[in-house]
Image (tube, rainbow, N blue to C red; front, side):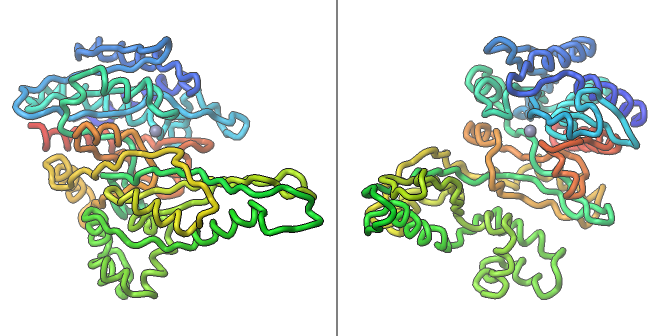
Length: 438
Ligand SMILES: [Zn+2]
């Protein structure tokens, strides 16, 4: 395969795609869908464009297999988040290349993913690879503001998507260490469950010169102190246990045995204190509570009659919301009202014991021998929850090799991707599909 030639082609396509401004809002993703439409039609790959509301376009392309196995879905999104143009060193919508990097809003999130997924379909078609499964490509609208007219709409209205066995979506990366060597392949296979609560304390207003015992601010902070110092119990999912086991060889010798058996590790107070000081590890092993909004009073010499707060909690899938809420209420005391604000569904993580996951592992061990492939329980929420809810085994993984500081450019300034990564990404997708679909 002529990778130099393919990289040139992918680079040209990504430059053109980055020049289409799909900042959401308003999105205007139809232009991105039309961009893919032109390419798929030149390559004679069947596709359909959808526009559930004006300008909010998505496109589905299908590379046919013989139907012996169920489809694999390549998912990506067309829209991007806004830019602060004056903070960028280059024009974020010009597709500029400098020193081996292509710059632009969407260069990482998520237009590069769209391009390598499209290129994988083109390569498999041109090579006439005989597939046992259909490979579906879906570039959707509206990921950045909730997915209502993107993937959510699509899963309700395009029946072929729901027939997929597997989906690959944005998420983890191949994380490089400071020497540029692959440290781990991070693949998110599940996510925490959003559970947001609104709290209200009522009291008696009055002049601040005469303090009394019915001050809502005081009631609220006392309750919140009890809630925020609650050390929620550990709840280790099998995939999280697997994550720590796979990370074990990378740890300093003294920590290795604790990573290998994380339940035992967490029962060792010095080790668990050290581990829990990492916010991501902490979030993977327990329900979490963040106090995010605190409101009460508007004038320094007036005791208000009401004050309020909001808690953003993220639960381990399968954790009991009822028990969690009961404990929160107990800690807040009787005088504080608690109301649900937003409640996500508890969706079990995707299995690691699949031929698709194994294909990724095989690629990793060929390409980066000894580098662990680790399943992440994502603290935040992505579109993958809608896919998993439909029964599609979903992996969040962008096949790009990035040092951790480069990942911070997602939604940041001077977002960019190295051209080397475009080649790596295409190669990985093609090899993985050949492994899992032929
Ligand atoms: Zn994204």
